[in-house]
Length: 319
Image 1 (cartoon, rainbow, N blue to C red):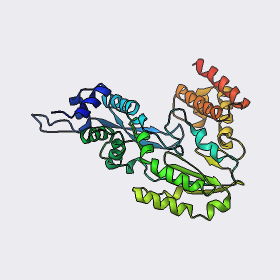
Image 2: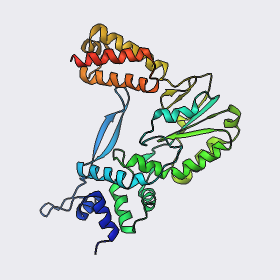
Image 3: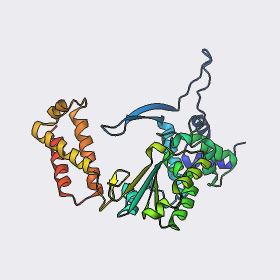
Image 4: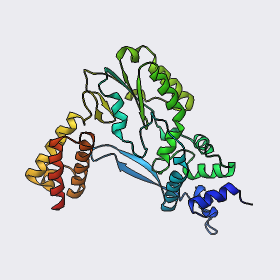
C-alpha cells in the first residue's frame, strides 16, 4: 500500500507515483536482450561562464525531471525560509543585495568554499527535506528526486535553494557572531564576505572560526581564493566595487568602452576578426549587451553605459 504522504506529493507535483519513482531511480531497467542498463535522468553540459571565462560542467536533468524539480521548488522548498545573510538564488534578491552591506568599509575579507555543490551529499539534502514534516518514504523520495550520484547536482533547478537551506544554521550562527563584533557578513553561494573595521576583523580569529565551522559540515576553504583588502585597494564583492558607491570595476568599464568603440567603427564582424574571437556577431553582441545591462543594473544613473546600451541595441537590430 502506497504511503499517504507519497500520494500527496504525487498529487502536489501532478506526476504519477510510478513516474516519480522512475525519476528518482538513476538507472534504466535492464534490457531483456542485452541485459544492460545506463543512466538516463541527467546529461553533462559544458558551458562557458561568460564569453571570456573558463568553462564548467553541469549535470542537467531531462525535461520531465527538470519540470518535477521546478514543482518541488515552488510547491515545497519555498515554504522553508532562508537566512537573511544568504543573498543568492532568492526571488527578489540580487548581487546588489550581497554587495550593499559592505559599502564604505575600512577592511574586507573574502573567503571561498571549495567544491561547494559537490560536497552537499544526500544526507544533507535529506535533512532539508525532513523540515517539510512528511513521512520518511515521502522525504526519501523528494531527496532522491533532487540528488544525482548522491550529491547535489549543479544544473538542477532545486540545487541552489537546497544549498542555501543546508547553510542556514551556518549563516545564522556566523552572522550573529559577526554582528556582536561589529562585522558585516553575507554569503553568495560559495563566496563569503566580511567587512568592517580592520582591528575588529583581524583580532577575532575570524578565518580560523569559519574554517572550523565549515570543516564540521564537511566543507573546506579554498585558501587560494582568500582575500584581505583595505579601503586603499579596489574592494570588490561578487564583481561589484564597494569602495565609494556600487559600480562595476573600472577594468570592465574600460573593456566595454573599447569593445563598443570597435563595434561602432568597424562593425561587429570585423571587430571580432581583428580580436581573433571565434563567435558569431549575433552571439557576441548579445553578450556585450548583457554585460552593459549588468553595469546599468548596478549603477542605473551611468549616462555612459546608457548610451552604449542604446547603440549596441540598435546595432543588434540591424543584423
